[in-house]
Image (cartoon, rainbow, N blue to C red; front, side):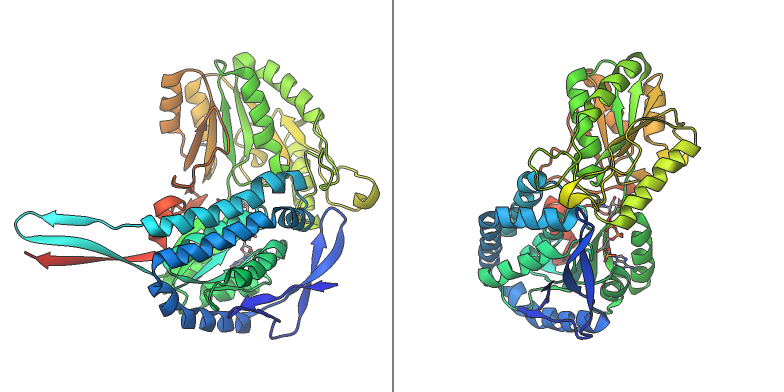
Length: 480
Ligand code: NDP
């Protein structure tokens, strides 16, 4: 069975303990590779490598850093098929999705920040007649990047690319559930000539490896994407050490559909925003709020379209929904469907584990599920499920729609469907989410600020925001 390795000081490296963890193929429910069960000793080794590499990497002209990062992007493009298949096997997602979303986006992240490195500039302020101030921005040092399992290579590169571009060196931990593409990525880094120690990847469990990264006294900043509960633990650990933190956390995103929307577009995009990647995207809209005038028509059409979706072998190009990432996660999602029933919800379609035959008969599949009849305040409508489960709730007017949209502890993303321009802008201002899509979903420009309000996170990533996060600003005041 294949044994994955950590990537430390430019080398594939076995965990110091010699221990490994099982890595599952969730579509088959079978172990197919082994990953290092690393611990604080491996993190310490990775830190030392990153620290030793820091001065040289930080002082390299940005054009040279950009060249290496662009080379990595080219190699990702070259290996598109191999990486898409690896992502699909590791995570359970349809290979057809990984081919058009995860892997192209990973190379786009690397290329975007490679070029950003060459355009990064800082401010200057003239204090009339007295002084010129300028802002010096220098890479913050060795940073920790911790990423989740839902978009493994996509979110891994989203974190490390800006860090490397500004001249930081990195100790990174991908999710233990989906380590494979980060492992393949380390091979591409070696091929691209990334200097040793600049990026270090330590595989293993969150509470062991992730916690050791957060606790390391000399890792100066942590960029984390994952669940809100883990985010709280990280914040509690890092705050007394005054570490800089970027936390991208969970969501319970509303999809506000007004009666004056373009109905067909609202339906087809809402199907995508509900069930893409089995609903395991932090930006998926899991609460569909529909204006009462079109509620019945919307529900009927939405249910009919949901019934057409195919749950199946992730390697079959006609599959719409693949497997959930793990048995534990499947059980969690199914438990929320049971909770919805207890809370009085009516399941219109789905509601059970999906049976897929052949090689996938033991996989972790869940039927796309649509639930109605629940109040917006119940647990099903307040807690993140992170699976192919949506609720549809009617509202009577704009005020009530906005109130329901804002009624959860989360504030990551929201989608608004209306053809009324004034309403679109008005509602966009009132909904408390870091990202608002109007008449679209998941349309991303990498220059825009990305992140959540309330319990969906702290700070923003994307564009200059990420470049600024990984640098320390210093004001230099020169008397004239
Ligand atoms: P987790 O919070 O469980 O894990 C995220 C990462 O943190 C994993 O690498 C995990 O390792 C690691 N980790 C776990 N415990 C600790 C710890 N104590 N200290 C440091 N690191 C730790 O999230 P999931 O992987 O389950 O991802 C799903 C969640 O991520 C959802 O809530 C989703 O909404 C959110 N998410 C948010 C996004 C955003 O941009 N706001 C984007 C994508 C997802 P391991 O897996 O080994 O336990």
